Image (cartoon, rainbow, N blue to C red):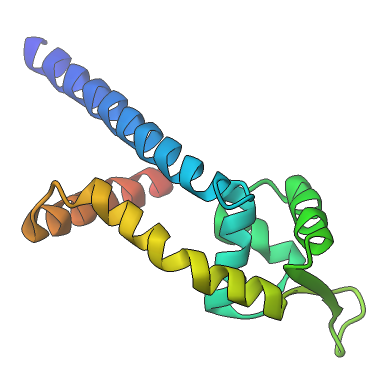
Length: 148
């Protein structure tokens, strides 16, 4: 019984430490992105379009882990800023794509290097081996959680 309680306590501590670490990192990344006039969700959409090309609006939420109801609002804001446009699918009129504009592309190309450096400045407290171990362990937990 004591061993079982110890395991449960360690699992809870793992969850709390992981949540706090994620929140601390996310807060820093969010502040950095906000200094460029966008929020983290807007940045995530632009970064997705920049790296993966045009995306159906219906699929963006799943790819950046955002509720589908919020996507329309985010897309509207990015479109108003001239960073993306909506494009009708030529093969299926029910599908609309989001496409990054030249202005959006230039914006991402300007900010992305400092974004990468900022994340590295947080994570570089770990050695390369520690990063690899952490990646593998977090994947293992993530995949297991999805199976539950």
